[in-house]
Image 1: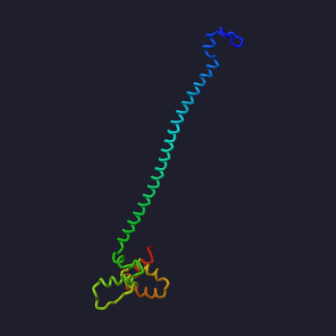
Image 2: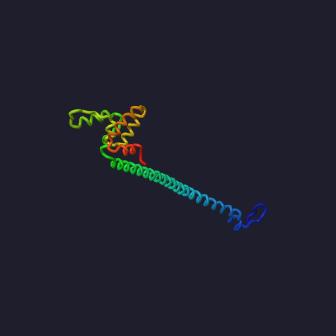
Length: 182
């Protein structure tokens, strides 16, 4: 038997085996080390896993936003295409002579000269004014454009129109077409 601190300790009991408190501390240390290792392993896997989920969620939101904007743009393009098609159909239903003869710009002198040079020469070249030509063709849109562009000179416009309306096939109907639909 060994004597320590004034007490007798049997060698096989106390020295060979650690005390229960020491044993508990060792078990806690082992458990703490294992827990720390497990937490470290979980933390290293857990953030990667969550980061991947967050990345996929962000990508999904971006794709949804893009698809929504693309669909909106596509519907707008379809609307524009339908508007253009309906406008072309309405213009096709108008009389072709009115559309081809009405001036598109202020260079109406050039248009009449080109038409005159293409037609066979007549004995007397009688140049008719644009108002007379529009009234003969009963082109209401062209006449409205002409009136709008020459609205500043009202006296001249009234004088020209009163004479030119007599050239129309059906003056009353032509005036109503120029005013608009009823």
